[in-house]
Image (cartoon, rainbow, N blue to C red; front, top):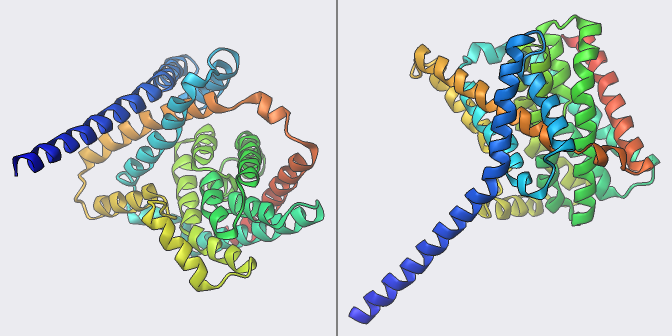
Amino acid sequence: MNLKLNLYHNKRSTIMKKLNNNFIKNIKGILPGFIVSILVAYLSILIAKFVPKLGAASIAIFLGMFVGNVFLNHNIFQKGYKFSETDLLSYSIVLLGATLSISTISEIGFSGVIFIVLQMAITIIGALYIGKKLGFSDNFRYMMASGNAVCGSSAIAATSPVIGADDKEKGISITIVNVTGIVLMFLLPIISQFLYNNEITQTSAMVGGILQSVGQVVASGAMVNEHVKDLSTIFKIVRIIFLVVVVFVLGHLKHKSNKEIIEEEVQDMEKGKIKVPWYVIGFFITCALFSLNIISNDISILCKEISNKFEIIALAAIGLRVNVKDLIKQGKSVSLYGLFIGLLQIVSAITLIGILL
């Protein structure tokens, strides 16, 4: 009996030691890039006090790009940059929910949802058609369609196992989708200023209905103003909700049955790969709690403050992760593919906004 207890305690001790070592190793890997992201963010806040028209968010992106490409683009920082961009931005979105009521979300209205559905459908059909004309494989076209229509890298990661894509196709599609998004991130505020004079709903629909990743939506919206940033994030969240539908549609295009797709979805969930990101669920939970007055106004103000700080750190990290060399060295054909999809999305969004919003 004592021998069994000793073996159990030894085994438990070994497991705990291994977990602690992994945790410490993970923290050490994150810290360098995380510290740089914080420093860039707070330097941006300081600069913004002298040039308030630019805003800390815009400064954080451009300053991050400068620092990341000229000085601190070494591998040791990349894990921390990624954590700052993805994890902190996710927490920021959940906290944002605690500052918005259901009535605020309903501002996009039924016409806003129809806009999102049609914009996604046109992007998917267009990406598949353009890719076919340019001679790309089915798998690559399907991943470009889902990545551009829904939520960038996350959508590609969700789609690739269903269609049986290999890692090389997945890697290239993620790169092109992100490059397209980075270019559009800077371009859309200029187009919106010219077409809509930064009117909140139309500008938010343009930004939230086109851009590929949540980070790009937040960054682009923040370049306009706080209201556009918040509402464009809501448009984006509505797009993400449709991710499961898009995965099913693309699975069917690969001639898979509902049963096969569902089995793959269940396997992914068992591995912890839930299709709808956790922060979307968290956003709606905090939003509901605020709407029911369970989250008080004082707590809501605190959530807004923390959310804004997380967001600026995340935007600094987005800038730090933009590799200008990668933007330049993309092949001609895949670059054209990304360009044509981006142009299609802009023309489609302008048309639909004119009709629906």
